Length: 547
Ligand code: HEM
View 1 (cartoon, rainbow, N blue to C red):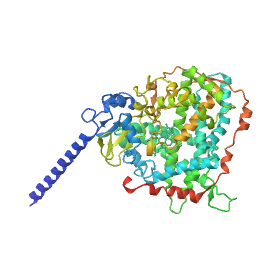
View 2 (cartoon, rainbow, N blue to C red; view 1 turned 120 degrees about the vertical axis):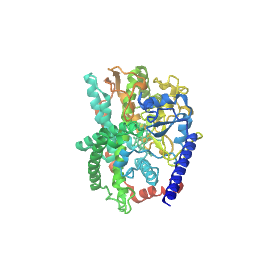
View 3 (cartoon, rainbow, N blue to C red; view 1 turned 135 degrees about the vertical axis):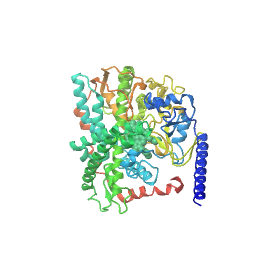
């Protein structure tokens, strides 16, 4: 009797294995072609030769739309063509829109439940709505003036004397440090408000958390691709780095939330006590936390704010730093940009309203974003359900990597693809981007970067005001080919030093006097109930089968 049961059990197990095997084979035959690799190691050695974005581009040479790689049994699909990347990014559904995590992250984030920018669900959508609503309400309340411009103007008064002093000394310096100092202050004002950004100790810790997040993310590229399979289990450096960052995050964000809560800016002058001053994103988050039925947990909000610290500072610093490098390497272009700004802009401060008239400056910003492609492999995605890409089937829970690097350096679209040539974005003296040249530096579609406008505006304000007021000259020798740039959390040029000369004709004092004050933001209130209702109303736009 026992033998019969055992026999039946074995038959059952074998059938299960055979069915699973056939299902896997069928799935694999429909997936993008697999790059041949070694037994057990898979494509590990193919990817270990160079930085990952260059390795994947090399591997993709023999494939069209997509290919599959495998590292220690971990299967990933790499999108390799403009068509497949566009298809994925602009996909109407969210079947391709999850973000992968790894054991390390899951352990640290309650199985990713504490992350909002992970799974595309209602909370994720509500947070994106809240983010957009904050910036558009600010614009309405400021009579269409952008919050980024108000905050930037204020900070420009601090950065200008420092740059002027450096220029007068004529000794070489790293402009990146000054940009970083200014941008971390600007982002802290937007995220946490002036009170926090002006407290030296807090801003120092915000910068420390930013550096730690940058290091964790640099490490994650490799952990996510399973290039360091043991890292997520026994890791030494990665895990301890993450623990330190989480400890700092818990402390710092705890302090910031406490400070912001104690200063809840309820408007006293208004008869409707429901009015609240939303001067920074943290005010908005607190109003979402303080509902009878809160939309988010405190840990989720802390994680979102931490993600925004990192996302909001470094991309902009890297872009501005790369822009100035290209201006130094191409002094003729720097002169043309300066002449354009002198001709089109009244006074010494370039404003966002000047953006539409400075074609070459816009072309140079575009060319810098194309060349440097800070996030060369997009931000990885994971399929929610079985998905279709360019006729291939990708099973649920597969990591999908859009190779934006390849797209931005596509030699069939961009001649001399690795050279800085802003004129490729100009036609008869006017800035234009052809359909085929469309850049995905910020992604596209449902999951595109929600900070794109903030980023573009700040990059514009930084670079135009820098070139308008200073002439830069490179001191160190730097290879301009972006293939030689380093990949940490993003691709960036090596550190370099410049010498600068102050060009401005107006005195600094007059600039400071004409500056609009951040305090303008203090006076703005919005109706809390209608604000929250519009975020809650996000719900009807999602159907159940989209999860
Ligand atoms: C030059 C600067 C920046 C670049 C190049 C950049 C690029 C990107 C890219 C490529 C994505 C992924 C899009 C996708 O998966 O399709 C992304 C997502 C994101 N970015 Fe940015 N970004 C920049 C600045 C910012 C800023 C200033 C903020 C916030 C203030 C921000 C917040 C975010 C967030 C929250 C996400 C996740 C969105 C989601 O998963 O739904 N980024 N960014």
